[in-house]
Length: 256
Image (cartoon, rainbow, N blue to C red; front, side, top):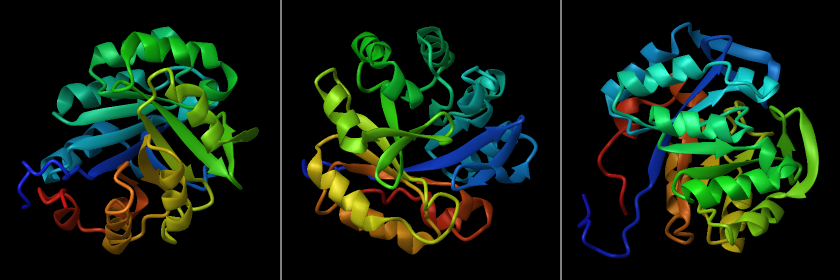
């Protein structure tokens, strides 16, 4: 492992995805709720498994909440945080200040805001002011260059950089950049768009969508040599379908 005292070294984080729909651990394809695969009926069990295999971070999404705007799976997510020592970033239908507060109070390391970043900017600014950029991130779920909202069902007229520009001065530090067309397809990430977006902003970027094997992970990690603001990558379906061996993924060698 490299000498961590080197000031130029930056961590590359692996965020293991747990998407919860109707209390089950599932994966969607391109954000389509009609094309979902159930991998386990107990998301808490799944979280404990990833924890035991060496995961450090979870990216948990309440898919029911993304559709309804309610905390549909709050209790399950709370149980995940109580049953593991994982850092958890959580999103999906978090559209009110009390929901943000409840998740943070329950132990979430970071709350991810999506639709309200487009529809209720004042609430997002208030959350950033109250909790800070380390606790609040924004999901940039993009289709054809435009940010989609409400569980990816509706396209807005805003591009990712518009969102970043709006909130950076209010303390935004991290965004999750997802190429919806790649999500759940196991066809590889959109490296061109990830690098280009990272080049245009100094906000920390967590890449998501299309990871199919360990080489895809290494490709995004390689981009970090040029774009230090690439924070890490979210991995879901490739783990659940055994296309990536957790022993290769969850190592201590997360530094260059």
